[in-house]
Amino acid sequence: MEITPIARIETDFKEKFGIPRQSGRVPALRGRIVFEPAFRDPQALRGLADYSHIWLLFDFSAAHREHWSPTVRPPRLGGNRRMGVFATRSPFRPNPIGLSCVRLEGLEHTASEGTVLHVSGVDLLDGTPIFDIKPYLPYADSYPEAHGGFGEAQRLHRLEVIFPEALLSRLSPDKREAVCACLADDPRPSYHDDPERVYSMRFAQYDVHFTVQDSRLTVIGVDTDA
Image (cartoon, rainbow, N blue to C red; front, top):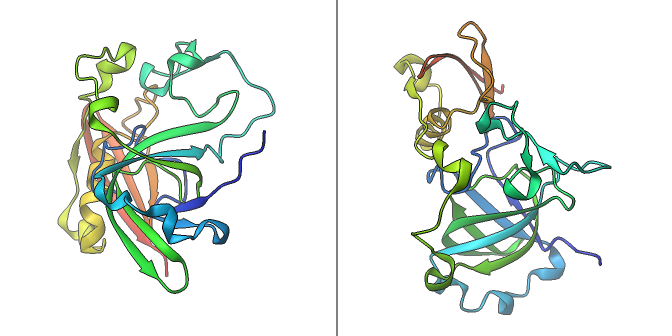
């Protein structure tokens, strides 16, 4: 079976480090879904604007491997405990297909790219191929009583972010909320616990440098592309 990408998403993440591990964790993260020329028929989107959220089926394009493993090491479990691949949302799967639910912010009709979808709460790398788009149906897709397995313990994990005003002002105002929220979500692998280590998160045209001690993240530098 051959699967052809119907679109690609544009986001502020040029690298994997820092991307939220689940969609919706950072509502301020925005993206643009641009359809491939062969799929720019506006009739295919008739009725989509009536929905508040959509499902994206996509290619874990940065995680392709020649062989697959039946077990993986989830970062949120410290990276040293193995779980079955089908009990995780790891990108390293027999078929590297991802599933994300994002908010549909609106449709924009353009002359050069056809109809573009604006979405928020994204967790995808810039340029990720999209295989399919489906509407989110609350009556069928929401199960409030469902059990979250071993991943539930990490649901409320957040860091306190110390972002000095002099450094925060280097970010454009429309990026500040998203950057702070991504940092609070703790982009580090869980097995990292070195307060002297300096991390760097690439976001849009910025490199944000920070350290973490206990549950406090401190931004120590912001570099901007010239």
